[in-house]
Image (tube, rainbow, N blue to C red):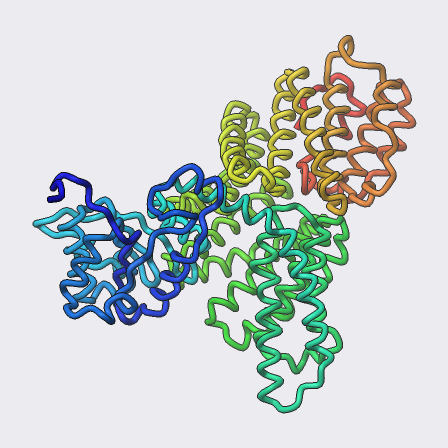
Length: 617
């Protein structure tokens, strides 16, 4: 006779409870859970929640498991009793389902409350959670782990891992990190697949297609492939920091639109083409090809504006037009065209508010509202020279991002936006002389970035953000007279930028970061007491020339010339210094703070000829 105290052995990882209206999602979830292979390191660390090998134990779903059962109730009870977890597929239909409620109550009675998970596929927690989950006078409400699978959610992949982690008996952070590392290792094969895919698409465009129905089928296939390349594939390649691979993706996607009469393209293809133009513009901006990027962004905006005019209430088209307005605002901000930058950012903000009013519960729309506030803060700070007003915008942006983070705390992109928002907030605090506040904001930013980098050490986007953080900390230290600390930060940042540049030589942004570290080092040494700094001649040698490939960036060129003028003035050559200042661009002479590094060129120019003044912005 078996010992009654022996722990019950569970046959299933989970029992999926769902309404018949959600059967398609339940089937997909069932297949994904049973097909998922745990990362090798995770599988080596634990055997909980799975059989031998790297797969979870079977998952029970009644449509598959009950066909041979003579007694439905008995079979359900037995399956629930033998399941580690209950996964409730939540939707308004599930909330009204009698059977979902009975399964929840049955599981709670047999296994308690701690092993219940939810998969939100439609609606909100208020409309999609069954009353059995919300509790009543007799039983307390449950607060189960919620995985957000809604189409509007930006954490759909993370949502799946949220369910896998407890089933496998591992921590979510560790699983996300190991899963991301495995995906990164697969990127080489994915990139190779992208190249093969472009060849397939090229073939599709030259094969004669007989019949309208056949043409539409081929167009749908091609559009599906392009959509994959512009969304999933591009998102996976971005953290690798390889513009050459992104160019391959863009080139392959572009093939589908060559030699086509754009006026005859269907709306879906036009939307896709606009998205492609935005991707190409984004990459060309990173290469320093700003005018080419502006042409691409302008063309994308014309397309999305026409599509929105045809269906002005379609949220997808409002969103697409918002992206166009943002990119047009951004590229004009980079080019120093303040009026067009403001027009683009304000239009983007209005569209983001339209989306949020249409669906206040949509976290993606709330993120858009946060982005809009951050953009307006940049303009107020850099163009209007009002860091106090900018701080208000940045604070509101962070409020929006943090509201979203409360619903998806492990989402990498949301955490990255919070870090970016803290960086902008720190800049506004620094410009107001609030160095303690600026340091606190930068420390909070750095903590988030370090956490993200620990999850994926190869994430080039996070590593670039850390470069900005390092440079900002150096600038604060220099302003406070801590020159040794500032120089140490600049040296470390320059070395990190050089390492990134070697891995992605096409990325002009990183080359500019390297040069910025060098220029701020010269500036820091010039700000040191005269007895502690090197001679103007030695610093001039260290500065080097202001020409070369990077000189195509006007901000870098102006900054270099300004430092040269300071060195000339320090050496007693005031006439040479004045002549060098005259060579500064009209953008440097008219802007209050430069677009990228926030340098006050007008104030710096005055300091060249005023050796008694030592304050720096």
